[in-house]
Image: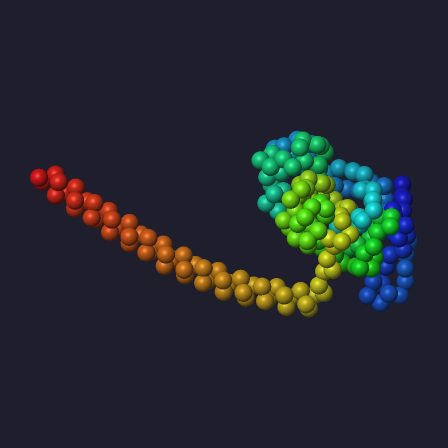
Amino acid sequence: MFNLIGKRSTLVYSGAQHDKRRSLEVALIPSEMKAVVFEQYGDPDVLRFVDFPVPQLGRGEALVKVHAVSLNGYDLMARAGRYRPNKGRFPHILGGDFGGELLALGPETECDLPLGTRVTSWWILPCGRCEQCVAGHQNRCARDYRYLGAHEHGAYAQYVKHRADHLIRKLNGEAWTLLVRTLLGVGIHDIDCGFKLFKREFLERIELHARGATRKFHANHRNSKD
């Protein structure tokens, strides 16, 4: 029923004692998990809640226990079949935007984050070998640009497998609140400025079209009299 994944996965901080680091517990990882999958393209009715094998880790990979997952636009397109990066391989698990707890590492895998860390991730899966990736521009990967949850199984499950070097430590509550307030303040200001600019340009365009239409009307009216 249970197995241990990865050489460094046998010990993790217990959830109750994570802050005080007072005790350690053996991470018993089940062989199966609950997941939302789909086996054909279609509307939301194609999604099914099933038992699914827990991902097995390879070198450079990490296992995260999913606490929350959100809905991305490409999840909708991939499920509906408007975007088919999984190339018809079913069953498939969506979900690229998630938060959770680092639970295990694959064999010979280095990670700056200790087991038990609350993490999120960058959902891009670059090749790591092309010129752009080697130069540090992984978002411009020219060879094998893939998305977690689109090309590979994602986080609509209890556990998700991801590249260990793509995991990002989640901020604590106070720092997160400050960041959100800052981003919201900047975002609202930008939206307000953008709306004012759009409104001005929109009205100017309406005025130009109205002037053009008026001139055309008068020209046609004069020609009809002639």
